[in-house]
Length: 240
Ligand SMILES: C[S@@+](CC[C@H](N)C(=O)[O-])C[C@H]1O[C@@H](n2cnc3c(N)ncnc32)[C@H](O)[C@@H]1O
Image (cartoon, rainbow, N blue to C red; front, side, top):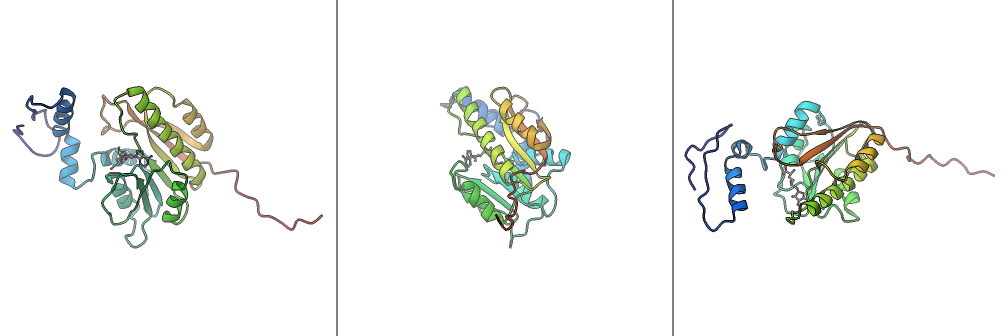
């Protein structure tokens, strides 16, 4: 492996990985990773992931996060989105207003509570809201199912995560809140879109520059939650 011109910022493909026992696909992944300007930027700027820049770019354009907000981050490891959310909402280390969940471990972070659990577990939604201490203003989901190598299977599993995250957002968000979720181009997302359009004033796809152009990854951004109609009406005296 030779890095002729290490550094940060945008740069031409320079680092090549020698043909060794690595499979071609692994070698291509490694080369792409080593030459990715966002990876270099993340290292230089102390970000936990290159994915952090996707949230930064989306938030710069759509301003979904603001100081004082409460945020849930689904699929948080290694912690890039939590890191950005905690900074932007000015989460206090003594009373964090950002709660993340992942079944992978995440290093502790000031301003965020991280639950190590599967979001698909029945008790995960209650645990998230309990840790947050109230309803969120924003639900983020960058969850992706582990790849199996079978594209269609991976797609269906990640779409299931997106759909479950959307149901969760609709059941917990404050009115006026926002939902941002990873999804994939093409395939079974019509039902999720229809459901989101019923509950949010604005729903559309976004592809931030940090999301690789060749990737089928996309994000759904649903803004201004209309609120739930199922808020229980207080019981009056039930007189006959
Ligand atoms: C692309 S990574 C998230 C990167 C993160 N946004 C960041 O900036 O560091 C996707 C994550 O989703 C997590 N994930 C997938 N399915 C999950 C589930 N059912 N419950 C919790 N986390 C899940 C994976 O473990 C993985 O860490």
